[in-house]
Length: 194
Image (cartoon, rainbow, N blue to C red; front, side, top):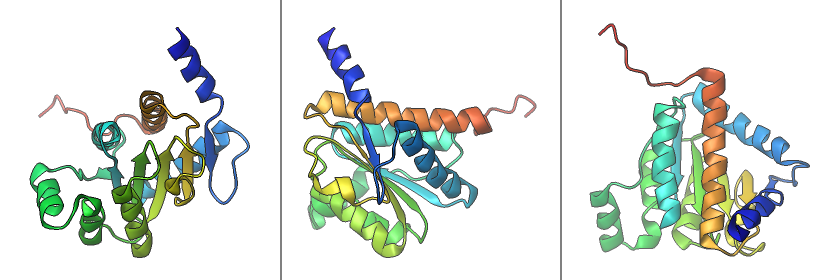
């Protein structure tokens, strides 16, 4: 049960910041929801990227934000695209090169890196910011990681255990989708009249 106790403890110490640290977790979630609602209302694209376990979270949430949340999401994980960019350029460019061609001003990127130091995630953040997009980061491990201050809003989990950091990132992202679904309903439903 220590693992669960550690997760519960970490949930009390999540840091959400922008140009300042938000006073409470709920205040930080409220600010993230403002970004998400603006993205959805204006039909801007939502991109989500990560590596390893964070890639699994990114892919899952891309589907949930599309089907349940009603966002214009695009997968950055097509195998031909990833292998082409990785082979011909380098894996560190796998996300930023896609964003250079697909992202527009005011699009939103959710960048996930447990360590906060994945070079391809850092490059993706810098690329979409150059385009005029917005960024929400999710990181963990050391408090001085590179990603922790690069976003418009930054979520930081103060743990150095991949499973715990990834579990909490996934939990927060799922919470965000669920709040939007509670407000707007599930976006994609089967019409039984067809």
